[in-house]
Every structure is written in C-alpha cells, then in structure tokens.
Length: 127
View 1 (cartoon, rainbow, N blue to C red):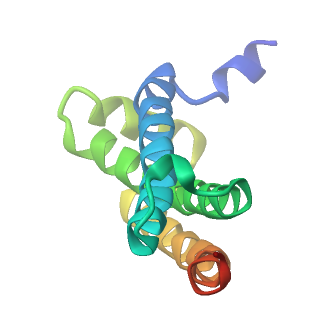
View 2: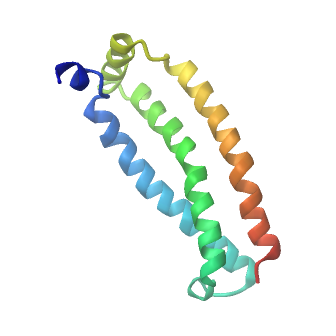
C-alpha cells in the first residue's frame, strides 16, 4: 500500500486542476451555447436540447487539454508550487515541464481535430 500511495500525484495537482476543469469546462460549454444562440438571434433558453448538447459536450472536451496546460503552467509559475511539482517529476521520472507542455499541445491539437468539426457542423446545420 505504501508504494501505491507514494506513486500518486501530490494533492496540490487536484487543488489546482479540478477548479480549472470545472469552472473552465462549464464556461466553455455555456459560452458555445451562448454563441450559438446569439448567432441565431434567439435567447439562450430557447436553444433546443440537441444543439445545446452537441455544442456543450465537445466544448467541454476541447477545454480539457487547455485546462491541463494551464494547470501545468500554474504549477510551474507559482514559486511555492513549483518545488512540489519538480519533486514529483524527479521522484517518478515524469517528463519535465517543456516536454509535458509539448505533449499536451499535441493532445490539444488532436482534441481540436475531433471536436471543432462537430461544433462547426452544429453551427452550420442546426436550426
């Protein structure tokens, strides 16, 4: 059990990433639906369920890699948090900040390649 506990990420990762994921994800989803409503000249509450769902879910999933990049940047940029993150990297042989950011950027590009066409299709074809 001790080995399993020692391989987990420090709690600060959760404290930084969870609020970013929840607040940013909800904002991205609501923002996509609000933009759709505005482009159609209707009130936010008048957006039908299907377009709302088809916009919200991809927008939320598109936010995830950007949330991880932002959280990684926060852990790297704030002096009291940086030593915790660097100690975790050293202890577990995890990639460094630049490598992680590059990998997350690739993940973001892949996520965008999947989610943006769905969002664009909703804007193009939904009533």
